[in-house]
Structures are given as C-alpha cells and as structure tokens.
Image (cartoon, rainbow, N blue to C red; front, side, top):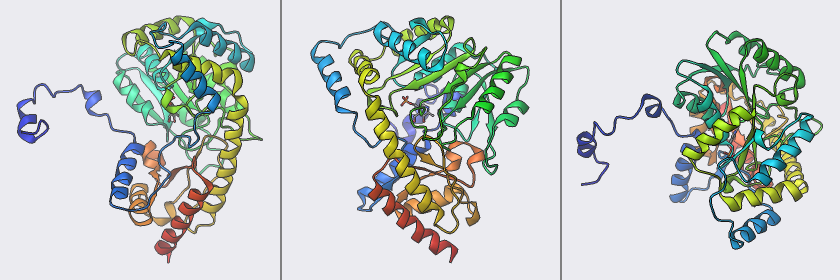
Length: 405
Ligand SMILES: Cc1ncc(COP(=O)(O)O)c(C=O)c1O
C-alpha cells in the first residue's frame, strides 16, 4: 500500500502529530502558483512566468569561475560556522565604509542565503508570547519564522492607497509592553517601495524609545533605482546596538542557488547566531563563500549593469500596466516587483490571479499571498525578458478588456 494513503496516515496518526506552528506552515504562494503553472505547461499551454522572485540572469562568469576554481583547489570542507574570516572581514569593512559606522568581523555572520539570517536571530531573541511587528503586505517567511520561534506575529498593514504608503503610524499603533522586535524591508518584496530617511528615523526612535530590536531586510539594496537612493536604519545613531541588517548575494549578483547571505549585528548576538548555525546547518559551503569574496572584490559593475536592465524593465511594465483599463500601477523605487491595484474589477486578488493563469496564460501572485493588506493587488516579478514582458502585457490587456467590456 502507498505510504501516504489514508489508512497508513491513520495508523501513524500519533507519529504525525506536528507542533502547532509547523502544522500552520504554508508554502510560499509563489511556489504554489509555479506548480499550477507547470501543470498547465505539461498539458501544452504556454505560460509566462511572472510569479517567482528570482533574477533571470546567469551568475556573472567571473564569480562562477571563482567558485569552480575553489572546488578544484579543495575548498570543499567545513568552515567556521559564522563564515570564513576573510569574507566576514571584507563584509564588515565594506559595510562600515558604506554606513559610516564601526564594524568588525565579529559583527558578521555568514549563512546559506539571507533566510537563515532572518530566522536564527529571531530564534535567538524571541520567547513565547513576545510580539514581533512585521509588514503586511510582506515577505511570507517573516510570519512563518515568528510563529516557529514561538512569538506572536503582529502584522502592520501598509495602506498602499496613500501615495507615500508610510508604515509609521501603523507600527506605532501596534507597540505594546510585549513588543520585542520590528521587521522592516526596504526595498520591499512585494511592493518595491523603499523607506525614506525620515521614515527610518521615525522607526529608529520608536525602537529606541521602547527598547526594541529591528531586523532590517535589505536583500534588495542593490536594486534601488536612481535617482532614489538606499538608506539603512543601521547607520542611524543608537541603532547599532539593536539592529540586525540582513543582506546577501542572491538578488544583487544573481546567486540564488549558491546560497549565500549575511547578517550584521551586535557581536553578542552574532555569537549566539553562530551557535545556532553550528547546530542547524553547520556552515555555508566553503567554495560558495570564496565565490562571494570574488563577488565583493570585482563585481560591482556587473551588479549595476543588471540593476540598469531591471530599471528599464520596470519602466516598460509600469507603462504597459497603466495602459490597461482596470489596472493602476505606481512606479516602485526598488526590487524587481510591481504591485498593481486591480480592485476596480470587484473580485478578489486570488480569483483574478487564478483567472490570469488559466485563461490568459500569465502566472502572477495575488497580493494576499503577502498578507491581508494585499487584497485588491497583484504582484508581478519583472525579472524577465522584454519580449516575455510585452507578451504578458498583451495577454493581460486582452483578458482585462474581456472583463470590463
Ligand atoms: C524580502 C526577502 N528577504 C529574503 C529573501 C531570501 O533571500 P535568500 O534567497 O538569499 O535566502 C528573499 C527572497 O526572495 C526576499 O524576497
């Protein structure tokens, strides 16, 4: 009998009693949509993929070459859990210069992707009942990691109808004596919005006044489009003691599959996060870390060239979306997402996203995949060729035309 068939599940009902937080875990919406899209493709349907948030560029050749040579030179062993010293040192130096603060290697923990640097500090800081305030709409892993860590997730809704969509009042209203940590993300997944210096100052003063930690997820930092500039809360007075800056190579250097990210944090926390790293993943692949060093040393130009291409795609998709009756799209300042408002159709985002996939052959995500405040919106990732973006927009224009006729 099939291992997963009903009677077997019944027999193992006791064994299959998972913890509450794990029972509540859901896959990221993007992967659910990808699976549905691939199912349609296996039936011969043509689908344009705007659902997954991943660079469509290859990792720059010089980085890949460095990774390959590192394997050939035997860089295939365990490393210190928090990362090889040269990489931690270089990350500390570059960020200290950029942010105008003092940092050393003890402030840096390297991990397999940025995700562990969100998750492990949360595990280290959150006790049962501690409240963690995080953005809605926001990256789905925030809520998941807070629940698994035993914390109470407190989403702060961002009212996207306001032009500047400031989260400050929303954050302020959710502070209680149980608040312990605020999560911010700029540029944002899914909206592409960035936090302006004044907003960062307001969040910093809330954090200082209530003695809170801040996780600042800056994984899309390099994808901030001129004339806008990226600003980090870590550079503000009084924030070095209470900030975990999360960054990595996945988006900036098209290295999602290499798994390489880092966190910058006070050394006392870094030590604990290093221990969690020891007892969970052990360490990050040694050759990946050497490839990361190469990326830091010589690949700013490649990273900027990719950013410029994303920026022109952003302009293309925003212009095309706003030409569609029933779609209203702001121009985001960063990341590679647009978050158009489609509420004029009077249907849920989920229904619209499903229909676009099945009827128009365009895979997009409902705004609600990122929280309740995403209702009325869709998320489209424009890390795709101009040709595919035009084709997707043609298909969407036809579909919306049929709905509003
Ligand atoms: C906002 C945000 N943070 C973190 C991550 C995770 O990055 P990594 O693949 O380096 O773990 C992602 C990936 O999509 C993201 O969108």
